[in-house]
Image 1: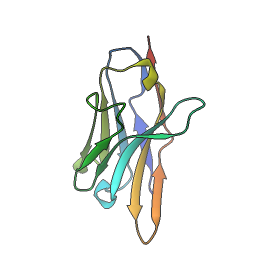
Image 2 (image 1 turned 90 degrees about the vertical axis):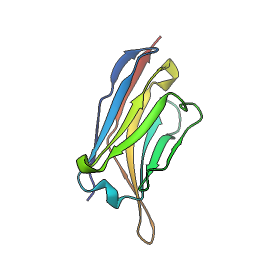
Image 3 (image 1 turned 45 degrees about the vertical axis):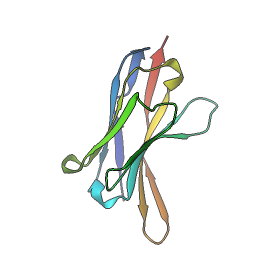
Image 4 (image 1 turned 30 degrees about the vertical axis):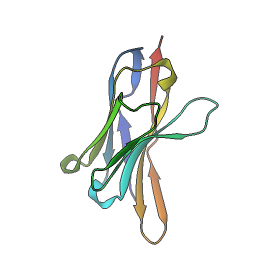
Length: 118
């Protein structure tokens, strides 16, 4: 069973930075892709950034130029560097791992709270 553990969330002022980490229980190279999602109160969970096994990345329009996703295969860890944070970035951030093995398989971490004060 895949386990994903997020860390690095917290309270930061607008304009500040945070780096989130997602440590996987196994080799992240076995995943087709990994990503970060977020869910604000009263809103649906949305994709923030994703990175494929081949290191291709994609970002939500709202975070382009401010957030960077990266991976360290040796440490089985994916990161989300967040800069120029805005109050609207406040949400619980979830790590996701996607594997296609005849069907879609999605694994989730428990989430880490990010709060940006104005």
